[in-house]
Image 1 (cartoon, rainbow, N blue to C red):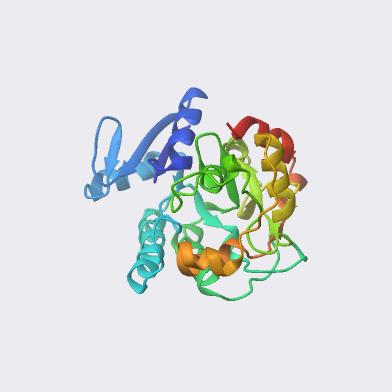
Image 2: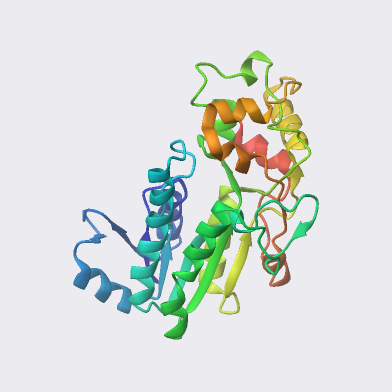
Amino acid sequence: MKIIIAGASGFIGQALTESLTAAGHTVQTLSRTARANQLAWDDETVWRDAVAQADAVINLCGASVAAKRWSEAYREEILYSRIEPTRKLASARPKVLVNASAVGLYGDHGDDEITEESFPVPDYFTHVCARWEEATQEAVKSGGRVVFLRIGQVFARGGGVIETMVNPPQVPFSPWKWGLGGPLGSGRQWVPWIHRDDVLGLISWALETESVTGPLNVVSPRPVTARQLADAIGKALGKPARFSVPLFALKALVGEFAEYLVASQRVMPTKALALGYKFRWPSLAEALADVVQ
């Protein structure tokens, strides 16, 4: 397949580019500046022609929600950095558009199981995700197949959520390596996690499976509570996980984003399971054994 990836420089995008290329696909990336085998946003005629000729487009664009405190300016950047690239790509009428979204669309559902059919609990990030998905509508109206990747917390070696938890950038040492690790918040909330290998696997599967359309929960089939996650990290590191991080301490470290770190989301990959996707890393213990160093 001829595939264009927008947002290929990120944590998922780099690994996805390598994975699809290794699988024999022809991959071009779309970024701010063009280098070898890349397309540039400024060269609109060129990238629109490339989209018309491509078999599929994957859009992973969006500023990190955890990179800065959420000032009004950064909240606007989070929204704009998702909506504008999505709208532009959709207007080019791709045959297939696999577009990033997030489980943040659902909001906090307590202990209730969340499927692709669940309704959101309104808050700031559900608004962002809803606008993000709505920005694909021109591609839908033109007859393209559009998939929304509602991605959970991604685990991978050397990056992602686990690296941030074990080595928080706001703290000058690793609490876990001193035996001071533990769950965020109460520990009772559900964590929708997934190994990056399965993120890549689900994207490839969605590209190749014509029956996959609309929302797709990109999460492990075995969600865990924050307490269970902390205990599993502690076991993988050979350290106890006794010290929880209360919400007020999280807010002092990361501001408003703390509320989203303790939201409870028992998300299930209902559509992926029903349509036959086989998870490589369904077990938390095995996934952490691969990820934790």
